[in-house]
Length: 271
Image (cartoon, rainbow, N blue to C red):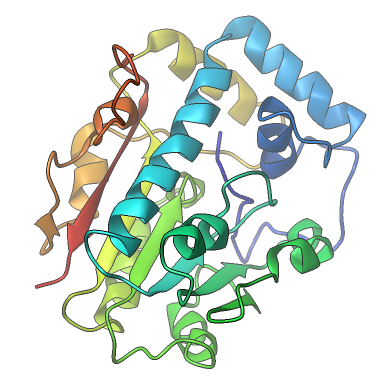
């Protein structure tokens, strides 16, 4: 599954279909949100019946996003964030975390799903010192994303590009890498890439549950090998500890013994 709504020109409808489960709504359901329909709850319960650990995956992804943004806004000194594949607002959204560390942070969210459009006002909040904007654009059109983002962000300054649970919706791996590369090419030296996605080779039950979900008629989400996820960072300087299962990425003090999740991610800096 994904932390964000699917973005894909050929398959995303411009109307809200409540007859089929929607990944962003199902994810919202697992995180305890209310922006979902009975069909999403049924799909979420069916998935959890096969793989109860999916709630841990959802929470692990959200926790990684928060830790990585706190690192970026704090230690790395980043003040601009381009979050592609925003999905439904839940808790600890990018602007909330970034501006809690650095109130003058500027955030642009990108999505083109009508359900997210309907909730965009919930995202469009900001501190007086910073800014938050929403861009209605397709993941498959990086040039439009950059052009629209430049209306709020100064893309001559270092910017953090964020893909949280979205690249698995791009079925072709080479195309997914091309999207990341084209967006990073539009950002200057000192910018960062943050990626986390579902991974293969850690949890067979998770993989079976995802395969069943992909056959349900919902928009598929492709789990990838750790090596493939690491490939998104080619040409970048990985921040320690590199691409790892999410609970191992800079865990907070007192977090306890981290569990291995079939969800990997990392952070890379553009030289």
